Amino acid sequence: MPVIQPKFIAIDSSLLGQWAADTCSKDIVRQKQAALMRDELFVANWIPVLYWHHFEELVRHANEEVAESRVKFLLTLPLVAWVSRADCRTEIIGSVVDLHATEIKIFLSLDQCNTSTNEFIQSTRADLLRFAKPSEITMLAMWRELRPYLMDMGIKQQEIASICHTTEDTYANVPLSALNNNTAMSWELAKQFYSEEVSSISNELVRRGDKRLSNPDDLAAWFCDMVFSNVAAISGIHRPPAEAFVEHFGFSIGDFHGAITLGEFREVVRRRKQLEVSVAQLGLRIEDVWPKLRDRLMPSEEIISQIRKSRKNAARSSGSDLNDDYHATLIPYLDAVVVNKRTHENLRQAKRKNPELSLLLKPVLKASCYHLIPSILRNNKNFA
Image (cartoon, rainbow, N blue to C red; front, top):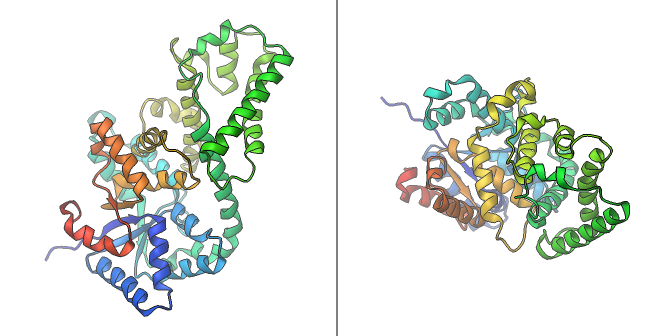
């Protein structure tokens, strides 16, 4: 007799919120619709997967009663799967940091010369998920204590997404070596340049940033303070500016080829900082593993990179953009992933521009309502 294997599906937070609302509704019709969704999903051996970023969005709803009802909904599910923590803390749902860490662990353990992309994905999947009754996730009982932190995190995500979307790559294609050609900037000129940058970014935040930003001027000033502090840190060092600049970020000028641009250098710095967090989850030092990771993007990194390139043309950013990106990183490792309309379009554009991404971006679902998901799964041969 064949063993029935569970199939894992991650559902966009907004649809989970709809499902929770109907489950907890006083309307009998809505209750029945929610119950039918649950029954159809589990009868077909589909198990919902929870990411830290799902929990985060569900719990930080402005109405605390709605947040409570959403947690109660999760606890009514017969089974759930969740992303494991890389540091082996079983009571907490893992985040994109843990997914990165799992990818890195598998990458370092495999013979890269003789391992296919599919083998890498299957090995990572086997190490990524746990599943059991939702009551075993003890952090669900801590939602009320975590909620203030998650609300603050939501504000920070609005700011980060807005800055990423509105700052232009004016100097991205300028060679790093061009720093050595610049003459010292006078203090008065630096103040004028700083003031112009703050004003320009603030205007862009109003025009293209998250509509919920409370103070674009303060955010623009904070960002410019950070950027100009990096410039100030090397201004008194009596060495070639390019050399001093890369050393300020923990690198050596010898680590880079002569034609590297400022934009490319920025991406290397950003990536290393991000990976450092995930590597620490494994009890490793970034200095020891960076040479192996530097020239190889993990699947999750590739997906986020492609989505963000496609999103550049969007009229406005949203704080939820970040969690939408993280949700999409599950695509290579699950049997189905339901994303929102915007993310689905970004993925479609990414695959059109780079057909090789089809190896990572297996068919992805979009659904206008949660209760349509079972029929979409039945009618799509890729999810049968």
